[in-house]
Picture 1 (tube, rainbow, N blue to C red):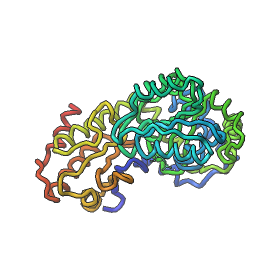
Picture 2: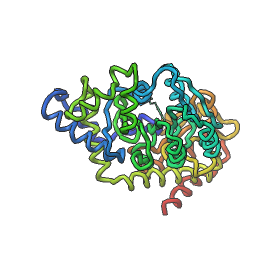
Picture 3: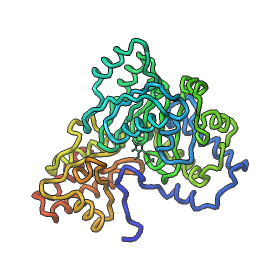
Length: 382
Ligand SMILES: Cc1ncc(COP(=O)(O)O)c(C=O)c1O
């Protein structure tokens, strides 16, 4: 059906009409007083969303741009970085650190698992000379559907004293992250996720400690330069021409988010993800992340039934129901499919998607009882 597509991938996510209408307007001049007023409000609302008193910078770039910005502004060649890797996006932070000439040590955990806190503690206790300058970690690892216990990880990092770079691309605006309270130095996210607008913007919060590291950075990024962005935030502007229409759309979605309230947003993501997980189990499928306590509330990774391919499941959902779900990435390609419950998603959407998945599986020959997943989901809401 035309215009009926439901993106159930972990980004881009569905965009509400209010935001689309903003994007349909003729762009404002980026140095105009009207746009400055919108930016001023947006910067303030981003602080609210990030639960921080620090400034939040806006970059015209995808999430990877903010990942690069984070590391380019604090690392010098030869600096030691410890990268906690539980999936592809954790690995990306390690690779970016290497491009800055850092000496990177990876602590890689089995994909589908979270960081082992005891191992992390032990490693940091060994670093008596405090050689590790930066620790990178992903909160919600989109490639596996796992969510790290970021508050506990931060407590360990704070005790050591290294700077922390946290990828919150699929957690900010979906799962609770409190950078000021937990001591996160740099927290980043992207626009096409919990923020409910199309791709094209990313966001970065930098603590005073991160700004101090920037002062000592010999070759900071030009486009993502922290000082240029800080000055721009203070002047209700941006250093360069921003994606004006996306920022107007963001201004609208942030208002929607404030109306719903952070606690309600987090509770909705939790309810939908845990309900979907119950449904998947009731259908008889296996979850890639078996432990609910380790699951991201933004993305659920599912193993296909024996003898049925991920490609056929995705094709069936797309052709018959206009629902797009994601394949696994890299080594997990064809092994799992991923369903997003991120951003502008409600109960009605998930009920429909579970029903669609059941019929798709049945048509592909799976031995499942129609309605079993929908029933489990409905019961989880009751
Ligand atoms: C956890 C995480 N980090 C980083 C990124 C990279 O963002 P982008 O694709 O917008 O560059 C993604 C994208 O899905 C992500 O899920």
